Image 1: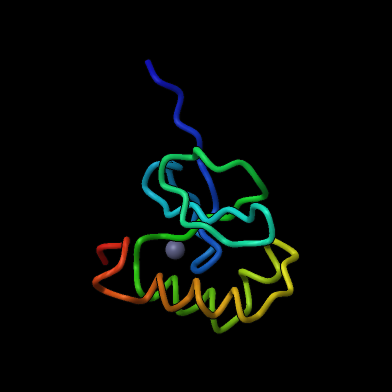
Image 2: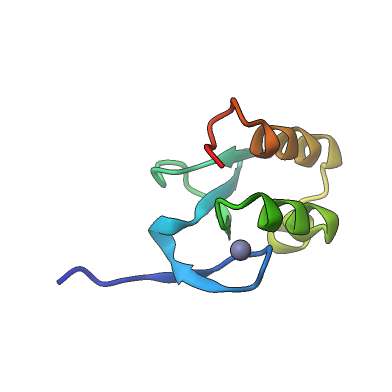
Length: 90
Ligand SMILES: [Zn+2]
């Protein structure tokens, strides 16, 4: 039996199996959407739900979870997360 690892969504604060969440990793001064966990670094998780993404952005959770202060980079990640034609199918 595979062990289920739970992680907290930074949007709704709900706890879910890790593979159900979007992983965002800070590596080399840039934020990456990291679905395969190939990128190593400090990470946070979000539900693949527009409400959680918007809450996390509004409450500056990307900044507080990752202690990352490059707001240009955060806003470009936000655009990527909210872009319906991007990597994320919400
Ligand atoms: Zn959530």
